[in-house]
Amino acid sequence: MGVLPPEGSSYHESMALQFTTSYLEDSLSLFHRYKAMGERAMAQVSEQQLTTALDEEMNSIALVVKHLAGNMRSRWTGFLTSDGEKPDRRRDSEFVDAPCSREAVMQLWEEGWRHVFSALEPLSDADLGRIVTIRGEAHSVMQAINRQITHYAYHIGQIVMLAKHFQGAQWQSLSIPRNQSADFNRRVRNKEASPR
Image (tube, rainbow, N blue to C red; front, side, top):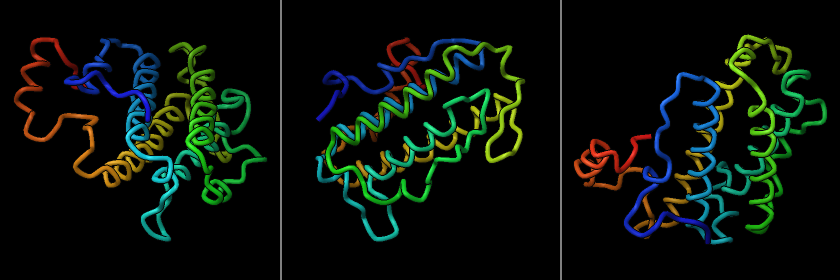
């Protein structure tokens, strides 16, 4: 169903903290971390579970991905030169008609993240004070990035919660497994794992 860490290892071993004082480097690291977390959660569920909503008010994983992809396209296309809420975006449509296959879900996911990384990777820390707008409201580049980190973390948390619900006892932890905190802390001190 996807790539999981090698047997006996955890998410933290594959996402070690890289010390930096660069806001952009750290932001890119966080975006990569949340992307990987979402992928690791989705890899644990069946194709049917990707499109299953728990009730009429909930979104399926597939709809959360569709919404994220729409947001990412809108926010990051022409990031420095156009408003982050594009006139052709139809946000409400992102919550209906979920993609029906894993392939379609993952295609949307990858397309969305391509927008994020292609907008951010060329930037330098000198760009952080530039002004961009979202729905006509001025943000510094740093504020706009923070806004999106928070938004994506929120929705990826939903994906993780749904995947964990569907997997129950079969869930493979994406963080520190229950009753293993002391061992994890020892491994961090020994530089065998990262708390990030």
